[in-house]
Every structure is written in C-alpha cells, then in structure tokens.
Length: 598
Image 1 (tube, one colour):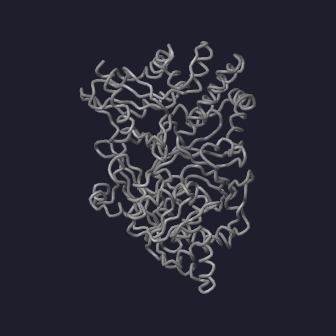
Image 2 (cartoon, rainbow, N blue to C red):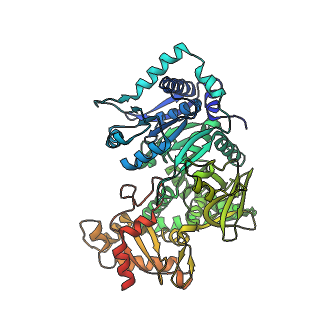
Image 3 (cartoon, helix red, strand yellow):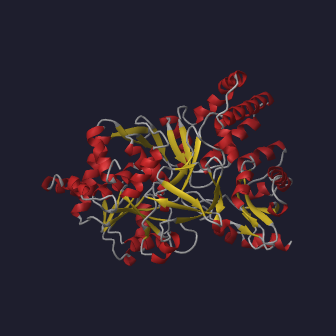
C-alpha cells in the first residue's frame, strides 16, 4: 500500500498540496475555501487537544453531526493518534446514542448543535465511559458543565503542541496497517446495532483497489451530501478524495443538493438511488406538463440516446447517422439535463441500494454516467463497481482487483480479501456467523455472476418473500420497476407467508396534483388527494403496465396508499435512505391484514 495508515495519507497533503483547496462549505450565502495546509493544521490541533485529554492509541472518539468540515477533521485527528472514530447518525434517538457510546466505550463525544446536546444530556447519567463533551455550534447557547465549545479542543491542542511539537507525526508513525481505524454501527432494522471494526488496511486497500478501475483525478471536485456516518460517503467522498488530493464541497443539506450542484459543479459525486429517482421523476413530470412538440422531441432524444448508449455498452460500432442524431439530441435535450447536475460531471457512483436498470439507462442515454457499485459496511465498503468503459445497466459491476467473490449454493454472495472487517465489536458469535474459518464474509445478499463477469444482485436474503404456496419472490426488482412510474414515489411489496402479493405505495404527490388539476378535482391535503375518485384506478393501471413480465404469483393483487412518505423521521427509512420493510409492515399491519381478509 502507498500509505500504512490514514493519518499518513492526510498529513502528507500539507507538504505536497499545501495551497490547493481541500474543502468548501457554505457560510452566509458564500462558499468558503479551505486549503490542505489549513485543514491539516486544524486537524493537528484537534488531535493534540484530544491527546491532552488522555486520548491515546486504541481509544474511541464519537462524532454525532451532519456533514461538515469539522467532522472530517475530527476523523483525521482521531486516526492520527491511533484512536478510533465512532460515527453516530444525528437522526438517532437518545437510547440508541447511549447504546453506541457505552458499547464502543467512547471517551469523547463531539456533537453538532444544541439539539444533539439535549439527546446526550437525557442519557448522561447512564454513560459509563464518556468523560469529555464538545459541541461544534455554540452561538447564543449557554453550555453547562461538562459541555465545552469545540474551539476549546483546538486551544488545548495549541498549548500541547508548544510543549511537544512533533507529537502527532510520532503518533502517526506508530499506527500500523492492521490497527483498528473505526467502529461503524450498522443501522440494523432488528436487534441491537452491531459495530463493524475496520482497520487502516481495510480502508486503504479499498481506496487503492477502487482507484485501479475508476479514474479519480487531482482536479476532481466532489459534492458530499450523503451522511459521513455511512461508510459509502466516508470512503468515496472523504478518504478516496483525500487520497487523490481532490476538492470536497459539503452540501448545506439534502434539500439543497439541487442548488449546490449548480453552484460548485462537481465532476464526481456518490449517491444512493433515491436522488437519481427524484431527478428522473421531476424531469418526466416537467416534460409531461410541457407542450406536445416538446414532449415529442424529448422522447425522440431519449430513444436515440438509448440506442447510442447500448451500442457503447456492448462495444459495438456507432453508425454515422446515429452519431449525428445523438449530437442533435444533445443540443436539443441532453445539454439541459447535464446542466441540471452541474454541467461538468464525469460520472456519478450509485450504491447503498439497488438502482433501477431503467433509470440508469435513462441517465446513460442523456450522457450522464451512473456507475453502480456494491458493498457493505463490513467490506469497507466496495466489492464491485461498474467501470467507465465496461458497464451494464441493472448490474453492480466487476469485482475489484485483489477482492474475491463467489456465489454459495443458495445464491448468497460471499467475499474475501483485505477489505473484509475484523469482526463485530464484542460480538464473537455474530462475527463467526458472518465470517467463516476460511475468511469468507457472508453478505446476506442473493446474486449471480453473468457470462461477462458482471455481478447482479437479486435481493437481500432476508427480504426474499416465500408465499404460503412455497413460491420465492424477490421484491426489489418489482419495486424498482414500479418507481419508474411518474405517479409512484415509494413502494414496499408484501407477501411473505401469504397467498399473494400486495403493496404499500407512496404516490408521487406532485404528479397526482397535476393529474387532479387536469381533472378539475378539489382536495385540501395529501390524504384527500390520494382518496380522490379515479386515483386508485390510475395507480392500478400503472402497476399493471409495469409488471407485464411477472409470473402470476409475483403480481400485485391489491395495494394501499401510505398515510405519508417513508422518511427517516417516521423511522420508515434508515439514515442511509433504505426502506425499513419491517417498520412499514408494522405501521400498516391493520390495513395490510384487511387486504388479505377481503
């Protein structure tokens, strides 16, 4: 490996790229730029401040905050001491925070704002190991002991460095590749969260193996908006970008991503499918509301784009007439789409959940590359990824170099290599269940490798529906097909141990409003909107038209409308925007039961 630990990777940038912009964040309406030298200097003071509190190699430092520069600096400060950063999603509840702090034995907790302070205060008396408490944002806030402003940590570090100026470089030197770098608690839908232990070697090997197949350039600009608490963003929009000396811009929030895309015009971005689904839905909605001629040109351009990108995908020659039509389509339609994502994006990477092949093809047709990958927290995370010159819609790409993958007899995907975690912290039985004696990690996903060596994911093993008639059904492909309808925003297919399949559907509110306006139908809120006459028939026709290729036992026989969108706040989405199926089924148990009784 080029670096033996993450601290070395980060601190080296001060000498190599001191004046280059490392980070950008928005403050008072303007983007503030921070050089690598400034970032490393600040991280060194934070590390020294932690050292002055007694934080040493092997200790744990917890951070609970949305994405921001200080989050990144706390991570590099911790790993430079040989300590472990424990990320905590800011959306978690007090009891969940208490569990993670106690289980990880975190000495220090650093939070973003008074809201997070209040969460920790509620369980303060139950914390067994946490002795030091800091908060990033303290404007107009009176802090009670033991809480301190984050700036105090840097002040402590400054005083510490006056006595031991070379303490941090010496600490970095002592950190070995096999040393633990982080404990990441999975946002499990059942039972206690499990803390996956990842080493410096796990993470750096994953950076290097990924970089062997995806070209990341020093002048690339990343827009970071997925939670840094999640390994996907932490790897790609944090470690990978630093490794190559790129610039990272932090989105103000998930809600401002569309605007921030236009402002910093990223060349690379990672996202979960939810963002692409929303862009896709909004584009189709805008087109459908436009004049007939505009619609006709748009769909002609998409047809041309699909024909073009499919020839590219299979490395077939591009006829001159197709090239001409594609260039015309770009001028008339695709340039506007590309401008909506900043206009200079080289590629997006999608992960965290399956991306619909139709949506990937749609963006590909418009000249916007979405390279879908696959991995888990426990695998640092990347196992496979599509390449810029070798990709398939509906597949998650080729296996990374130096990574092994095999398919078990029951279809489960197994992987082995330097990317696989040490194990689950304090959970020996669960570790043995996940990693066998030969080092194979059992992913819990069902998949296959096709003749061209592309991995395709069918579904999560635990999500597979087994009907009362013994038929096996993978719900994700069905759901991915349904959300391509402009009228369907989110969906969960139900049917385990049942005679047939049903669904809980969140309709697309904007598309339904436009439909209702066209029909001159009145309503005053979402629930009245979805209960308008004709809405159920409209969604039924969408379902039927999108599921013609399904076997009879896979078809959706009935459905209900969700009372509201699935969100993190109502616990129906995980912090990484995956649907919690068990929570949706629990919350709609009575309505689901009624469908089967009827």
